[in-house]
Image (cartoon, helix red, strand yellow):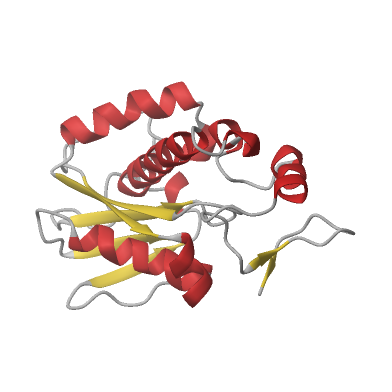
Length: 200
């Protein structure tokens, strides 16, 4: 069972993002405030769940959360400011979208820029430790998957309905054959000799 809070009695928001390692599409973040008495043994890091489990938990989270919001940074913003800064921007936008002002932010990962007037703590692998961060990871992932599935109807050759913009072999081969779309991150480079991502 994940931890329900870092400090009991405080209005804490969990924040996480999805899509940092993709070649196309936005990076999406979520901010979630859960009730202090909320317990759900199925909550986990979204990467450890099936798509069906994520969708089921998304409905549970949206129904039970005190507040939640999604923030997005576009592929153009990623190219302009780099993926780390864009991810943090998406998190800030999610926090700004909350209908309840949190007292503290639980941030997944090890890097964050302070949000005005709200203290925070970065927690590596926080989505496997705290319920609010796990809930945020699920909302961010399911929202972004919906965006990429929708875009795939216009760009079906790239297989985004299945790979969601990640650098699968099919996606890389489609880029080589058909070139880039307006949704590809042009600062992410793939060489012919290796399949690792490089940040330009």
